[in-house]
Length: 398
Image (cartoon, rainbow, N blue to C red):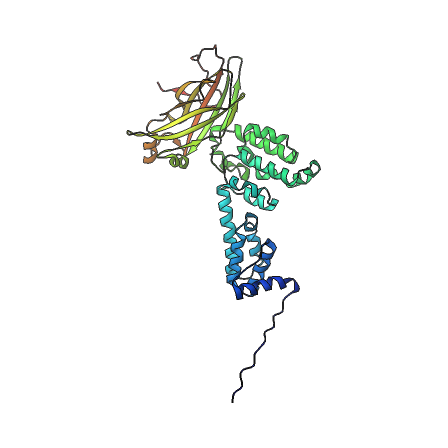
C-alpha cells in the first residue's frame, strides 16, 4: 500500500524590512485585495512583487501610483530599481503620459504642482512643449512655488541657490514682468540681471522676426513654448507731438490653419501708458467667403477720454523687398468704446493660404504691425501720422 506523499514545506527568506510588503503580496495572491495607502507602502509592495515576479500585483501598484501627480512623476526614478524589463517600460510610460497630460493644461493642476519638490518642478518647466497661456503665467507660478516652500525671508538664500530663473523663458515675458523680476528676492541677482539683459536684446533684435530669431540661439531660454496667447513685441516712441507704441504680432502658418474655418487667436496683454490692450485675429465666414479680421481691444476701466489713432500694417514682398504696407486705419476713443478693428484686413488670404500661394506668408510667417498713437481729445484725429523709424516705411494701398 502506497503512503500519501509527505507534505513539503517552503521556506522563503526575506529581509526584516520586507516583512510588511511581503504580507501585502500574500494578501493580494490569496484574497485579491490590496491595502497600502501611502507612497512608501505602494513602492515597497511594487519592489517585492518585482522580486517574486508577481506581475499582476506590480501592475496594480503602478496603477495606484498614477493616482497622484507627485507619485506618477517618480515612476522613471522607480524604473531603475525594478529588474523586470516589462515593469521598467510600464513605469516610464506612466510618467511620460502624466507629463504630457500636465503639460497640455498645466495651470489646471496648479494646487498640486505647488506642493511638488524642486526636481519635479524642474522636469516639468524645462519642457519645450509646455502649453501655457503666456510666459507671465510661468513666472507667477515659479514665484508662488518659491513663496510656498521658502516663506521666510531668511530662507530666500536657499531659494536663490536653486536658480529658479532657469525655468523661465525671459525673452517672452512682458516688460512689466521683466521689471518686476529685477526686484524679486528669490532669484540670484547676477543671473537675473544677465537673463533680463539677454531678453531685452532679443526683443529689440528685429522685433517682427521674433519667430525666426530662435534659430540663432542654442540656449533653451529662447525657444518659444506652446503659448495659448501669442507673444507680441512692443516698442514705444514718445515726442512732444505724440506718444506711440508699435506692436509686432506674428502668426505661423499652423496657427492660421488652426483658426480656419472659424476661429480666433488672441495676443498676450500689453501696456501703453496706463492702458492695457490685446489683439485678436479671427477667421470669420459668410455665405460668400472667409474673412481675416484683426481687432485692438482696450481692457479695464478708464474714466478719461483718450483718443488712440490706430494703423494696421502687414508685411509682404514689394519689388523683391519685404516691407510693411498699411491695410487699414481708424480711431479708438477709450471710455466710449473698447475695441476697434477691421473685419477684412487681408482679402483673399484664406483662399491663398489653402492653395499654398499666399503673398503675406513669408518663410511660413504672417507678420502684422499695429501702430497705436495717443492724441488728446481736442487734437485732430486725422492729423498726419509720421512713420515710425526702425522698420520699413509703409505704403498706403489706396
